[in-house]
Image (cartoon, rainbow, N blue to C red; front, top):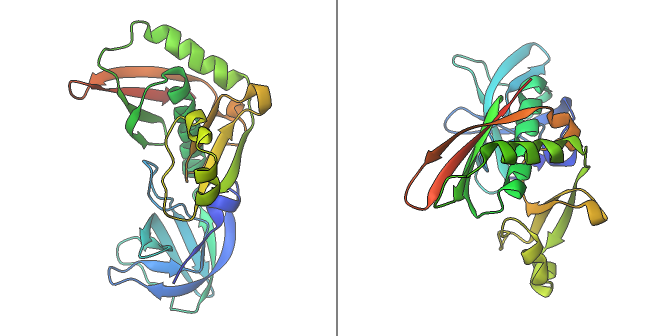
Length: 240
Protein backbone atom coordinates (compact mmCIF):
# COMPACT_ATOMS: atom_id res chain seq x y z
CA UNK A 1 0.00 0.00 0.00
CA UNK A 2 1.40 3.41 -0.96
CA UNK A 3 0.25 7.02 -0.93
CA UNK A 4 0.77 9.46 -3.80
CA UNK A 5 2.61 12.48 -2.29
CA UNK A 6 0.68 15.41 -3.77
CA UNK A 7 2.80 17.85 -1.74
CA UNK A 8 5.78 16.82 -3.90
CA UNK A 9 3.91 17.71 -7.09
CA UNK A 10 2.62 21.12 -5.96
CA UNK A 11 3.61 22.56 -2.60
CA UNK A 12 1.07 25.38 -3.08
CA UNK A 13 -2.01 23.16 -3.45
CA UNK A 14 -4.36 23.79 -0.51
CA UNK A 15 -7.14 21.26 -1.05
CA UNK A 16 -7.53 18.02 -2.97
CA UNK A 17 -9.75 14.91 -3.03
CA UNK A 18 -8.58 11.50 -1.83
CA UNK A 19 -9.89 8.07 -0.93
CA UNK A 20 -9.37 6.34 2.42
CA UNK A 21 -7.19 3.28 1.81
CA UNK A 22 -6.94 1.92 5.36
CA UNK A 23 -6.82 2.70 9.06
CA UNK A 24 -3.70 2.14 11.14
CA UNK A 25 -3.71 0.18 14.39
CA UNK A 26 -2.94 3.45 16.18
CA UNK A 27 -6.00 5.21 14.74
CA UNK A 28 -4.50 7.03 11.77
CA UNK A 29 -6.13 7.33 8.36
CA UNK A 30 -4.14 6.23 5.32
CA UNK A 31 -5.08 8.07 2.11
CA UNK A 32 -4.41 7.03 -1.47
CA UNK A 33 -3.05 10.53 -2.16
CA UNK A 34 -1.86 13.00 0.45
CA UNK A 35 -1.88 16.77 0.32
CA UNK A 36 -0.35 16.67 3.82
CA UNK A 37 3.43 16.51 4.18
CA UNK A 38 4.55 13.65 6.42
CA UNK A 39 6.98 14.41 9.26
CA UNK A 40 10.57 14.02 8.13
CA UNK A 41 13.85 15.77 7.46
CA UNK A 42 13.31 18.11 10.40
CA UNK A 43 10.03 19.39 8.95
CA UNK A 44 6.84 18.76 10.99
CA UNK A 45 3.90 16.91 9.52
CA UNK A 46 1.08 19.04 8.11
CA UNK A 47 -2.24 19.65 9.81
CA UNK A 48 -5.71 20.59 8.54
CA UNK A 49 -8.94 18.68 8.14
CA UNK A 50 -10.79 16.05 6.11
CA UNK A 51 -14.39 16.54 4.99
CA UNK A 52 -16.72 13.91 3.55
CA UNK A 53 -20.44 13.46 3.11
CA UNK A 54 -21.78 13.73 6.64
CA UNK A 55 -18.48 14.07 8.48
CA UNK A 56 -15.35 16.01 9.31
CA UNK A 57 -12.06 15.05 10.94
CA UNK A 58 -9.39 17.44 12.23
CA UNK A 59 -5.88 16.42 11.14
CA UNK A 60 -3.34 17.17 13.89
CA UNK A 61 -0.24 15.86 12.11
CA UNK A 62 0.88 13.50 9.35
CA UNK A 63 3.26 10.53 9.54
CA UNK A 64 4.94 7.99 7.28
CA UNK A 65 3.74 4.46 7.94
CA UNK A 66 5.11 1.34 6.30
CA UNK A 67 6.60 1.36 2.82
CA UNK A 68 5.46 4.49 1.01
CA UNK A 69 2.20 4.98 2.94
CA UNK A 70 1.18 8.23 4.64
CA UNK A 71 -1.30 8.48 7.52
CA UNK A 72 -3.06 11.58 8.77
CA UNK A 73 -3.53 11.61 12.54
CA UNK A 74 -6.92 12.68 13.95
CA UNK A 75 -7.63 14.80 16.98
CA UNK A 76 -8.73 13.02 20.16
CA UNK A 77 -12.21 11.52 20.00
CA UNK A 78 -12.58 12.07 16.24
CA UNK A 79 -14.82 9.91 14.08
CA UNK A 80 -12.79 8.40 11.25
CA UNK A 81 -14.02 8.16 7.66
CA UNK A 82 -14.56 4.53 6.70
CA UNK A 83 -12.23 2.71 4.31
CA UNK A 84 -13.24 3.55 0.75
CA UNK A 85 -14.74 6.93 1.64
CA UNK A 86 -14.07 9.82 -0.72
CA UNK A 87 -12.79 12.78 1.29
CA UNK A 88 -11.69 16.34 0.61
CA UNK A 89 -8.38 17.36 2.16
CA UNK A 90 -8.04 20.91 3.46
CA UNK A 91 -4.52 22.00 4.36
CA UNK A 92 -3.70 24.38 7.23
CA UNK A 93 -2.07 26.64 4.67
CA UNK A 94 -0.67 29.34 6.94
CA UNK A 95 1.24 26.75 8.97
CA UNK A 96 2.53 24.92 5.87
CA UNK A 97 3.59 28.14 4.14
CA UNK A 98 5.55 29.19 7.23
CA UNK A 99 7.35 25.82 7.14
CA UNK A 100 8.12 26.36 3.44
CA UNK A 101 9.64 29.78 4.12
CA UNK A 102 11.74 28.52 7.03
CA UNK A 103 12.87 25.39 5.19
CA UNK A 104 14.04 27.33 2.15
CA UNK A 105 15.82 29.86 4.36
CA UNK A 106 17.71 27.04 6.08
CA UNK A 107 19.00 25.87 2.70
CA UNK A 108 20.41 29.37 2.24
CA UNK A 109 21.83 29.37 5.77
CA UNK A 110 23.87 26.32 4.75
CA UNK A 111 25.22 28.42 1.86
CA UNK A 112 26.44 31.32 3.99
CA UNK A 113 27.84 28.84 6.55
CA UNK A 114 29.46 26.31 4.18
CA UNK A 115 30.14 23.65 6.80
CA UNK A 116 28.89 20.09 7.26
CA UNK A 117 25.32 19.98 8.59
CA UNK A 118 24.55 17.30 11.18
CA UNK A 119 20.90 18.08 11.89
CA UNK A 120 18.11 20.60 11.77
CA UNK A 121 14.56 21.43 12.77
CA UNK A 122 11.77 23.60 11.40
CA UNK A 123 8.95 25.49 13.12
CA UNK A 124 6.49 28.10 11.90
CA UNK A 125 8.53 31.09 13.04
CA UNK A 126 12.07 29.77 13.25
CA UNK A 127 14.44 26.97 12.37
CA UNK A 128 17.89 25.77 13.25
CA UNK A 129 20.80 23.89 11.76
CA UNK A 130 23.53 22.01 13.59
CA UNK A 131 26.94 22.50 12.01
CA UNK A 132 30.30 20.81 12.38
CA UNK A 133 31.68 24.11 13.70
CA UNK A 134 34.38 23.87 16.39
CA UNK A 135 34.42 27.66 16.90
CA UNK A 136 31.51 30.10 17.03
CA UNK A 137 31.17 32.54 14.10
CA UNK A 138 33.31 35.63 14.53
CA UNK A 139 30.81 37.99 12.89
CA UNK A 140 27.19 36.83 13.19
CA UNK A 141 25.92 40.17 11.83
CA UNK A 142 27.87 39.65 8.61
CA UNK A 143 26.38 36.17 8.20
CA UNK A 144 22.90 37.58 8.73
CA UNK A 145 23.52 40.26 6.09
CA UNK A 146 24.82 37.65 3.62
CA UNK A 147 21.77 35.47 4.25
CA UNK A 148 19.35 38.36 3.74
CA UNK A 149 21.17 39.39 0.57
CA UNK A 150 20.62 35.91 -0.91
CA UNK A 151 16.95 36.02 0.04
CA UNK A 152 16.51 39.48 -1.48
CA UNK A 153 17.89 38.29 -4.84
CA UNK A 154 14.50 36.56 -5.28
CA UNK A 155 16.10 33.48 -6.82
CA UNK A 156 13.90 30.73 -8.27
CA UNK A 157 13.63 27.49 -6.29
CA UNK A 158 13.21 24.47 -8.56
CA UNK A 159 13.60 20.72 -8.40
CA UNK A 160 15.04 17.90 -10.48
CA UNK A 161 14.91 14.16 -10.10
CA UNK A 162 17.95 12.00 -10.70
CA UNK A 163 18.20 8.21 -10.58
CA UNK A 164 20.73 6.39 -8.43
CA UNK A 165 22.33 5.15 -11.66
CA UNK A 166 22.68 8.70 -13.01
CA UNK A 167 24.22 9.76 -9.73
CA UNK A 168 26.73 6.92 -9.83
CA UNK A 169 27.58 7.84 -13.44
CA UNK A 170 28.21 11.47 -12.45
CA UNK A 171 30.21 11.39 -9.20
CA UNK A 172 31.29 15.02 -9.69
CA UNK A 173 27.66 16.02 -9.11
CA UNK A 174 27.99 15.17 -5.43
CA UNK A 175 30.74 17.76 -5.10
CA UNK A 176 28.35 20.48 -6.23
CA UNK A 177 25.81 19.57 -3.56
CA UNK A 178 25.85 21.01 -0.06
CA UNK A 179 24.57 17.68 1.33
CA UNK A 180 25.51 14.19 0.19
CA UNK A 181 22.43 12.46 -1.28
CA UNK A 182 20.99 9.24 0.11
CA UNK A 183 21.23 6.17 -2.08
CA UNK A 184 19.17 3.02 -2.42
CA UNK A 185 15.65 4.34 -3.04
CA UNK A 186 16.05 4.36 -6.82
CA UNK A 187 15.93 8.11 -7.35
CA UNK A 188 16.89 11.32 -5.58
CA UNK A 189 15.04 14.64 -5.57
CA UNK A 190 17.33 17.65 -5.89
CA UNK A 191 16.29 21.14 -4.81
CA UNK A 192 18.06 23.91 -6.71
CA UNK A 193 18.20 27.59 -5.70
CA UNK A 194 19.11 29.87 -8.59
CA UNK A 195 19.71 28.91 -12.19
CA UNK A 196 22.81 28.73 -14.35
CA UNK A 197 25.49 31.19 -13.27
CA UNK A 198 23.14 32.39 -10.50
CA UNK A 199 22.81 28.96 -8.88
CA UNK A 200 23.75 29.19 -5.21
CA UNK A 201 22.62 25.83 -3.82
CA UNK A 202 21.83 22.30 -4.91
CA UNK A 203 20.98 19.58 -2.41
CA UNK A 204 18.82 16.48 -2.02
CA UNK A 205 15.64 17.22 -0.06
CA UNK A 206 12.13 15.83 0.25
CA UNK A 207 10.59 18.83 2.01
CA UNK A 208 8.40 21.67 0.78
CA UNK A 209 9.83 25.01 -0.33
CA UNK A 210 8.74 28.40 -1.61
CA UNK A 211 8.97 29.05 -5.36
CA UNK A 212 11.24 32.08 -4.99
CA UNK A 213 13.56 33.14 -2.19
CA UNK A 214 11.93 36.57 -1.99
CA UNK A 215 8.88 34.91 -0.41
CA UNK A 216 10.95 34.18 2.72
CA UNK A 217 10.96 37.84 3.73
CA UNK A 218 13.10 39.25 6.52
CA UNK A 219 15.11 36.95 8.77
CA UNK A 220 17.49 37.30 11.68
CA UNK A 221 20.02 34.96 13.21
CA UNK A 222 19.41 34.06 16.82
CA UNK A 223 21.62 32.42 19.40
CA UNK A 224 24.46 30.06 18.58
CA UNK A 225 24.61 27.15 21.03
CA UNK A 226 27.54 24.85 21.64
CA UNK A 227 26.31 21.25 21.24
CA UNK A 228 29.55 19.36 21.79
CA UNK A 229 33.24 19.81 21.10
CA UNK A 230 32.78 20.04 17.32
CA UNK A 231 29.19 21.19 16.93
CA UNK A 232 27.28 24.45 17.11
CA UNK A 233 23.52 24.99 16.71
CA UNK A 234 22.55 28.14 14.81
CA UNK A 235 19.00 29.49 15.14
CA UNK A 236 17.27 31.53 12.45
CA UNK A 237 14.02 33.46 12.93
CA UNK A 238 11.46 34.83 10.50
CA UNK A 239 10.94 38.54 11.15
CA UNK A 240 7.40 39.01 9.88
